[in-house]
Length: 451
Image (cartoon, rainbow, N blue to C red; front, side):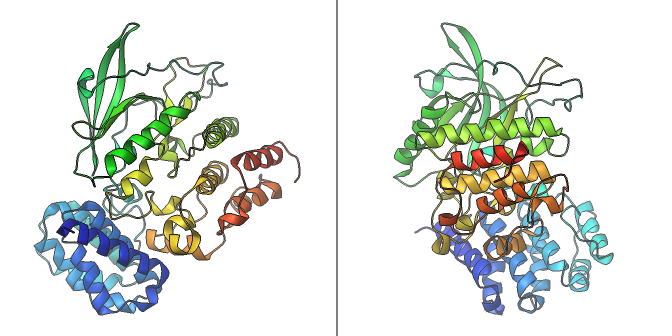
């Protein structure tokens, strides 16, 4: 195993231990975590910050003696590593604000605003997920290396009230073709994640010229990866005839694994939370759940469903809502093997089996039901069940029951709480047997019926 592989293995081991046994950490384990912040791998450093966040919330004294060592990494490590170090310092500052403030003020860090903001926030004891972009919620996606990390597509204005109804027909989609990668002409770079490069591309068929999005795995992968990659894309393509699933145009493994999908010009569901009417929310829920039902009927699971993977086709008719489509089928679990992050999703959207697979089993169709429950909860309640530092969230996912959604929206019925509670059971054996069962009961209670 090379050095990068050893780092990833160490990061995964320490993160798992921080989730399951944070009370066992001592100064020796904390030193191992700090060493990971020296890694060139973003996902290794992100795992380290999450591990520290969890340990400091459950076993703060284990971390207190290492605050200066953590802060000093801002002087010794390259700037590219500072986001993750600052994030970790933000977590530690919730327990030890004075120690973090003093440690940072002792350093010669110049005049960069991020450091000053962190010091100011610590001084006022107002550290939260939004102190700076470096310690904020959005940064929890940085470095994941998943294909849902591409930059935002063209800016679309918020849905206006006059957009009063869903479209009668789904938008047209680009045709699939059997072609090599060089059949797709690059138009514009769409950025890069830890493991993928992305381009807006054009290609031609007998029906004309079409736009699409090409994504390429940019790092070397295990020998078995090509076959697994092809299997995942074949599965995705086998269910993309559903109008709420992003279609696959083409895919291949030469010279490196790549795939081309429909380019969505609208925003993500994660960007629209809080601006949707009840009618829109219910329609989006219906379309997304129907897409999962369709895929499960063919034996295909998603494995990493979050609001960032629900992307809208932009509507150019002011009377119609934008159309939601589910993307990245199977991709998050596929790319886990290239990452030190064992979950494939941000902590706020993790299912128990993604946090502690040795206790709750692997990712399967039941995981999609859990994730659907989270999306429904967030759309209806205006927030997720667990909102805290990533480490604390991971701990709650495996030990606590989510609060009822009606606690945050008193317009919701007890029936909605009951349906979501079943979708969130820790043991997959006690969740809904099928997503169809989940849909049937959810529809009934949302329509005012009882269970």
